[in-house]
Amino acid sequence: MKDEQLLRYSRQIMLPEIDIEGQQRLLEATVMLIGLGGLGSPVSMYLASAGVGHLMLVDDDSVELSNLQRQIVHSTADIDRPKVESARDRLLALNPDCKITLVNKQLNESELLQKTKDVEVVIDGSDNFPTRFAVNQACFMNKTPLVSGAAIRFEGQMSVFDPREQNSPCYRCLYNDEEMATETCSQTGVVAPLLGVIGSLQAMETIKLITGLGETLIGKLLLFDAATSEFQTMRFKKDPCCPVCGKSQ
Image (cartoon, rainbow, N blue to C red):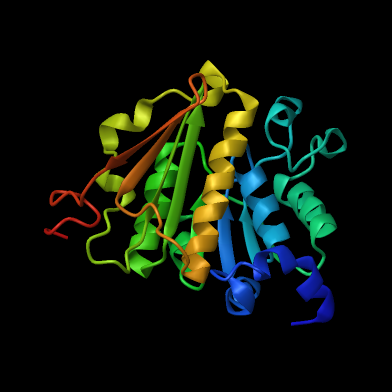
């Protein structure tokens, strides 16, 4: 590790749970981030600044004025630019040592399966169930840990799914096809700082997975109500009838 890196990451390195070894793991890690919106913005900024060595950014959208209320990785000058390009410039300004790969398209099933194969963690910051289901399927097949988050109105939630762990549920253990017609932020709205709360928690869980520190949210659903400032944690188990990880699969 270079002297400049020792100084940049010194506040993390001094933590015994991370130390030089943990920081080196972060520097050597590749993380795939799906969605550069309200959740992907804080996640990407915290992971880049924390020293994750390689970020793969996946998003096929362009920046719109209505995004800027909550998607803090983008600026007014970025309107009409591809989100992956806008995010890349902001992240490199934060940490020029971070390697960034851009995927400015919606991945099909085979592409998703291929790209989730060689990364340490996948972070789902998407806003629709078809994408979340497809990401979960690819991560399960490749045994790649998945950090999933969602936020709408004043409510946010997140969990961690790790197919390497025998008893870890997957995303489909929580949600089935009947939930796919739920509301979106564009229909009902969302308060801006809520995305920062959930996105920051996703970044923290990612760092924990890479460094091995602490206890992750595997088998737990973390719920946050911004209106009352209350957190709740619900435990859940593998669904034996799950179409992805169930016993019949």
